[in-house]
Length: 484
Ligand SMILES: [Ca+2]
Image (tube, rainbow, N blue to C red; front, side, top):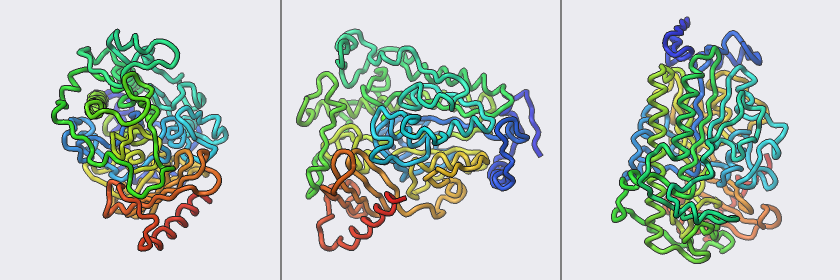
């Protein structure tokens, strides 16, 4: 049934039909064949290229943002299923990454901050790469995958790698000079006329390209995680990417105001951005700065798009593209001035909606799925696609049925939390509760948005009598998720 040729990139040369794994995967689960290493089938399983992009909201052409220059994200979408309504479970780096990798939700005491250690918060829970490693995969981590490079060390077949230059964000000496000293930061953005090669993300891509060439020759499948730093602040990218977005064409959001009738406990001061040089410590940024921030974010997205293209080119050149699952994820959304906010750290739509594109053997590309999905669904999906048993601890649900049929039933609500806030998002509504900072104690404020009538979340309707039944129902939905 399967013929392998070592002449076409080792494993990637296996003559495996595109529909093979969708047919085989359930049989493998039923037969319980999955030995820890060297199983009969281990060398036939697809590889996984797991691409994380820090702070990337769905700000790409393939997500309908027309001015974006993202030919390679778009190319990836044409090869797979684009999830148009995907959500992170917590809008901050370390916590979201830990939740993705462990396949469980954040709580008031677990996965709470940007610097979360997955192995400390959930020490007994096997992570996604660990399970793959235990089932015969060679697992590699390049760049920012977990927040902390040395987190979850047993999950990786090799020590996780990051470029030595990762602490040098700014290319221009005058900007680097501003960043010296305790907690001093340089400017929030920079457009330097410098080559791509000097930037850490280009180097992360180089290392991943070298790994692809090396891992293609192994007699076992690989799980290769590649995490890019941009478009996280500071928005530093070579000038030629800034030139794609002329200043006079930058549009500011038309809802740079706090939602009407929403309790002030939901207000947010975006301290992360204020820590950078030239950003006011309080109050809004100037219109000129707002435009530069949006330009800078877009420039960084296009810079990462270039790296995505290099990865896709090498996969094709090595003949790995037919037998490699690709998952493209951010780690949370980002507020680019909406509601007068910047950064993440909230439960609003713009902070929690995320990109998710899945390419897999046997899956027809160029399709869009509008079902509600969440990042805890990634772990069970990957187990499902390669035929690994799903660990019992998982709280997500495999997306595999949606890869076959994008309108299959999935789930009625997704869950997001941050700080003192818990939220559910259903097909039509977003319902948010805010408690004290740690997420415990009585509810101090409620937000309810009718996204069919108000997709920007500009009008809280929680206190409107006409929404009383909806509010009661969503309160129960949230309680149900929190009690699981
Ligand atoms: Ca992040």
